[in-house]
Structures are given as C-alpha cells and as structure tokens.
Amino acid sequence: MTHDDSAFIASGLEVLKRYASQGATLSYDDLHRELGHPFGDDASERIGKLCDAITVFHSRATGLQLMISVLVRDGDTGLPRDEFFALAAGLGRLAATDAIDARRAFVDAQERRVFMVFRPTKASTSGFAPNH
Image (cartoon, rainbow, N blue to C red; front, side, top):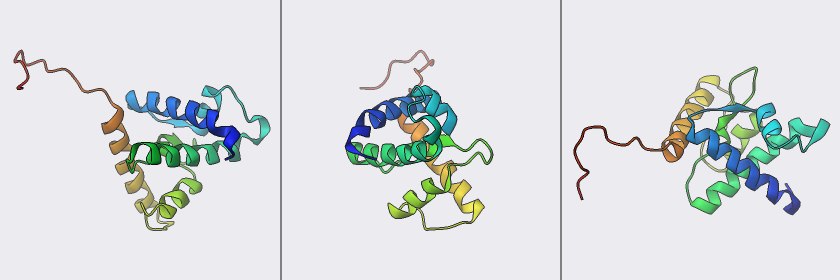
C-alpha cells in the first residue's frame, strides 16, 4: 500500500469496526462494494493488500494484537485468503501452516477476540445497580 492509500485504510477500518460491532463478517467483494468500488478490475489483489494494511495499521495504532481483517472472508472457502495467513505468520501470531484445521482454529480465535473488543456490552437487566 502506498501513502496515498491511507484514506482507504481509514475507510476500510471503519467498515470493519462496524461489522465487528454487529458480530458479522463480510466478503472481499462486500468490502470493495462498501468502499465504493475504488479498485475497478484490479480489486481482488488490492483488496487483499488493503486488508493486510488495515490489520497492521490497527495493531500499531491500538497496541492490540488483533487481526481485524479476519472478518473479511473468501466467498468460496469461508476463510480469509492465503495472504492473511502469511501476514499472521509474518507478525508472529501464527506458525506458517497450510493445515486447514490450524487455520480454522486461528480464524475462530481471532474472530472471537475481534467481536469481544468491538461488540457493545449488554446493559444489565437484573434490576440491580452496578457496583461502584
């Protein structure tokens, strides 16, 4: 990604935060559509690179070791693309592997963490005031 893509990173991050707050995932095509189809015919490769840039930016900005782009999935496999796993390995968050079970377990764990961070907490319905 280039410096000129910082606006796409910020916009993409906002989209992912919104989906995370809803406990939802989206496809690469969905993300491209949400951003207004900025990449035209070159979308597939550029959206994948954008997802990597969003994850790196978010991790550096927050200090959280979340792979927020875990929410973006391939429509055929239901998993992020290979580049996501290469980034995770490069960041030391997952051992390099092609094992589908290890990849699914990593995706499930990351998804739970992302949802835990971004999902709004439910208000208590017990009728008791919170302890202070």
